Image (cartoon, rainbow, N blue to C red; front, side, top):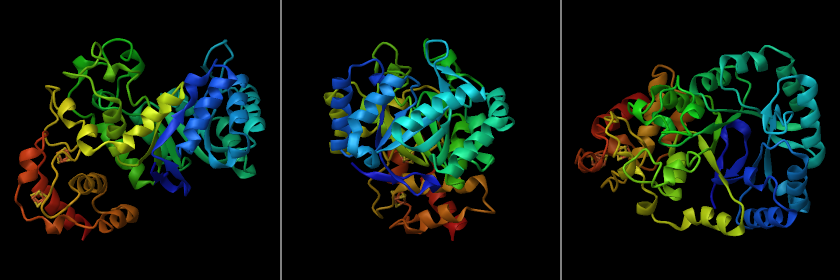
Length: 379
Ligand code: SF4
Ligand code: SF4
């Protein structure tokens, strides 16, 4: 396992986390098996968005004395008022469910404002008593950090610009990254994943990752497999399915991503997820699969590292990533991004312009130009 900084929270989270949704409705013995496997393998962040008391209690009981070893994402506004997963912004209802999760886990590490996708969601959270409640939870120490979850890059960027959240849970996979930001992923996930709409990487999604980096908002990832469609022969929008490690690798390669929450119902599924760390780079390389889309990726670095090796040992994807973030505000490059660039062992000024990377890049990225621009912008 390796651990990443989660934005400005100061916390280091495991690169693979546990999404606990699939433990809902399962007997305690099965919940314990999965929780044990996760903790034994170094997973230290769990997403517990489910509002049901039983599954929350089962997870807490399975953790037992190990509660402090694991950080919990608990979602504010996640309810089951209609006998199924639901969202509420009505304060008495929100409080009832949140006080319950607090009493079960003692405190919550990441208090997530639940599901802020639309302008209405934004207003219902930030222009009502909801936000006061969230801020009070933080002041009292009931939640240690404020986060939120979203599937919409435009609304998510607006939430980040309030300066309130320190982290975000966002749906990330290569198919969603190509879906125009005006589209609702849930209109497509059950059908064709919006494949007819794809026009290369959606600029608003790419911009969101850069805004997160510039504001030091860490990302945890949901839906990295696109609800299983990306790994399905029948449903993949690409010429062939991606593998689970390729999907995890794609998500972990996005700027600001700290952890990919993977669902598991058995010990074996936990072991399969953490098996990602034993694979070599070629087994995680997603570039050849997503390059099969006949759309305009041209010139966009997707941070896949397919262009390596570089004779100057430059981490080309990392340089491109920092450059993309800096391009957002070239006259005011965030100090954290500048410092990340300078902490690279080899930087753009070491490029000898051999162009072997450009020959290998499936997306036609002008690497040499980027190396020069990186030096100019960061020096
Ligand atoms: S330059 Fe091309 S091959 Fe290299 S990381 Fe970017 S997209 Fe991948
Ligand atoms: S062109 Fe520059 S960045 Fe690309 S492989 Fe050669 S030295 Fe490395």
